[in-house]
Structures are given as structure tokens and as C-alpha cells.
Length: 301
Image (cartoon, rainbow, N blue to C red):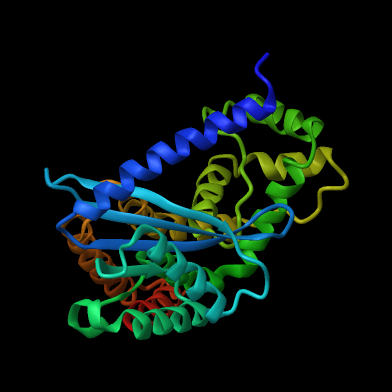
């Protein structure tokens, strides 16, 4: 077997070769570079910053490269984040080539970009007026979360039911057995959502709705299962899931890496706005209330 130290040396050699290739490529680049950056927290609760460059090469192909993935000690203040971002720009010698910086929408990122604008002021497009871009996918997430808040009680009952039936392999088997007895054709497995990612809530609802007849039957067999979603909960979830499908298709466009330029999603965003306006005229009070909250957030951005 190759020793650990030799593998480490080989990896670092590969890194040096690839770093130099990309450095020279960015040095010759005639176009500007769009930056996306985000923070990620590991299982050990350590914060890491990823910095990705997006640019159009000489053959008019949209490229993206991860420039840095770095541990950032707490506290994650705007000054600290700006420092690590500027260090990456200096390391790659691209301070004069930055076009935009896309970040999630939060006050710390607002402050970080303001610091970067001051440091790069003379080399920015429109004196930095267009530097700060708020992540469209994150804004959609905020819009949907505001809307979902109107059905939180129904959503909680469905979520709690999913939590109960995916908690152990025995319960999963019981659930699947009952689904077979009821001749339900859906083959998807129940999945629990992540509250900070609305599209996972959409997927959870989509699958749970397929199995809505299973839950009340299981209540008869399982004494410890008590909080069963009501008929109204399922009807509400069904109506809401239909609306969320519109958001889901647009989020999929945003989530691509090599194609989501403005011409691809601008029309979809306009169509989404028209849909929300239309929902606000709905006879359904829940949909009307949900879409009003969505519209308010959408217009803010």
C-alpha cells in the first residue's frame, strides 16, 4: 500500500499544478469574474467559507471554479468575512476583475460587501453600484417560508406524522405494509424536510399526500401514534403543494451551475409574480393569505 505521507504529497503536487494552470488562465482572462460565496457549518459546528469564481472564457463557455474553501473561526463578523474574501482575491490576483459578488441575504453579508466595495472601489463596474447581488434561490426560499407560515399548524401535524413513521426501521416496515394493503401505487419513501430548505418541505408534502389514507389506518394499530393530520390538513397541503410546484421549477433553474444566466430565468420570475398576484384573488382564504405574504416579500426584493 502507498503510505499516507506519499498520498498527501501527491495531492499537494496535483493542487500546485492545477493552481498554476488556473492562475495563468485567470491572468489572461479578458472578461470579468462573478463571485459567489457562502458559509457552511460542519458537524463539529465549525464554519467554513467557500468562494467560487464564474466567468466566460475565450470560447464563450460559462466556467466556474472553486477558488477557496477555508475554515473561518468565530465570530463570523462582517470584518472577518471581508478579510477572507479579500485574501482570496489577492491570492488569485483578481482584485481588478471582479464584476459581482452573490451572497445570501443577511445583514452580515450586507456589511461584508460594503467593506469590499471600499477596498476595491477604483476597479469596480459603476463604482460598485452593481457589485452586491442577493442570491435569487435564497430570496425564493424567504418568499416561500413567509407563505408557509400561514399553514404552520397543519404543516406541523404532517411533519410530526412523518417523523413518527420514519423514526425506526420497524415503523417504516409497518407503514410500507399498510400502504401495500391499501394498494397504494406510490413507491417513494417518506422523507422528512429541513425547515431551512423550503423545497425539502415541498418534497415531504408531495410524498405524504400520496400516502394520506395510510396515516388514519395506522392510528388504529399503533396506540402511541396520536397526532394524525385531519382531512382539512390534507386538503390544505394539497392546495399549497400545487402552488409550490411553480416555485420548485424555478428553483431548479437557479440551482444549475453552468447555465442559469439571466435570460434563462427572467421570464420565469415574471410568470411567478403574475401567478402570486392571481392567487391573491383566490376564493380560498388560506391561499389568499399565503400569497399576500409571499407577494409582500417578493416585492421587497
